View (cartoon, rainbow, N blue to C red):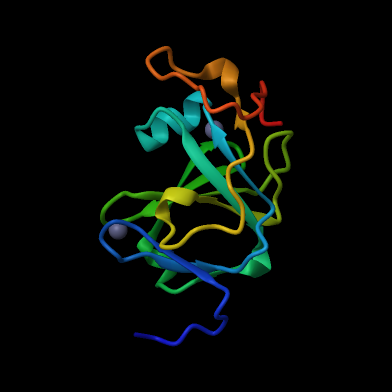
Length: 144
Ligand SMILES: [Zn+2]
Ligand SMILES: [Zn+2]
């Protein structure tokens, strides 16, 4: 077992383990995204995301183990090049939906609880009709 540099860090990985990383709280946010891009790219009803500033995420793996898919100009989705688990989203062009100075991390890839619980549903207007959102959290159209 490797010693973590920062004992507060939370580790995460893809299914096969080729991509490993650690993020260091505090995180910026945590929310469930129901947009069509998240649904199709993750093969799930919605995706729960957190984000941290660039300096608070360290890859513990060869960068070549990550595959980046550009879904629209400047919007990238990071997955394991071997097992295809989707782990990250990054933006190189600022948009209303995404900042360029942080890593968006799929909470499902983490090994331990985050420093916060999900606080909202976003892009709720794109949600599927075969899943019921009934947890009482705020629901927003668009990303916030
Ligand atoms: Zn993998
Ligand atoms: Zn989304």
